[in-house]
Image 1: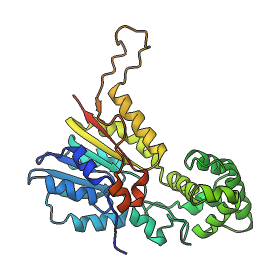
Image 2: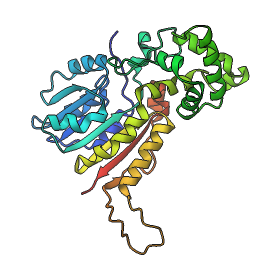
Image 3: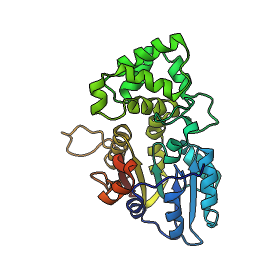
Image 4: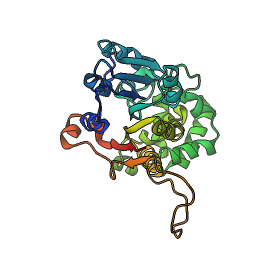
Length: 311
């Protein structure tokens, strides 16, 4: 299966990065190299591009697409190791960083990967297939309370308690091994009238399990400060999110880096000594336009936020 992924908010992200021909740019979620290709086209022979992805299929596809660009280096890793991976290349400062979070169209459409609830496939959902734990392990081994917590917190599903209860009851009869089996259990946990109103009943639970398995929110939360620190003066970080949990983390961390002062509001001057690292460029996130929404319905929930480093 060919690695196809339509890059969301492509023009807006490339514009937001303000690519300098001789600069150094990093894409921490390389995918099919849609954004990467546009960055590389803007670089001179002196420029550098580093693409990182944990998915082997993405690495193969992106390496092929970027093979014409001598400036491009492709690394199989998780973006949480970006600072270390760059240091290993002798790079300690960069001019721009890009993250396009969430699951790619290729991962969703490749049935064997088990990301989608639309077909029956093995319960996998690993973004990095070197990882041993799969979605099946979570579904079959987590305590009911833990399942409830992740479906409530990461899926934001108001039927989380009922879904967790049904999963535990079903797995006592036999292990849940496919996406189809899990989808059926979720359907039985949600009132029919609610299923009609709020889209596919399994969507939120699948999202929750995927986030838990791949530690998506922890990785994002733990990585952003370090990325901002390695930006050169005027360097920018552009992040595309696809659900409110990711967006909230990005928004909060960008604001904290802009205004890190922890002094009580009544203090006339700052005494905590925490200095601003830059400025938030997007007071409100940039959203896809009507044309993009018509061409790519999956872009509907995308939000782009941009932060600029100021030394």
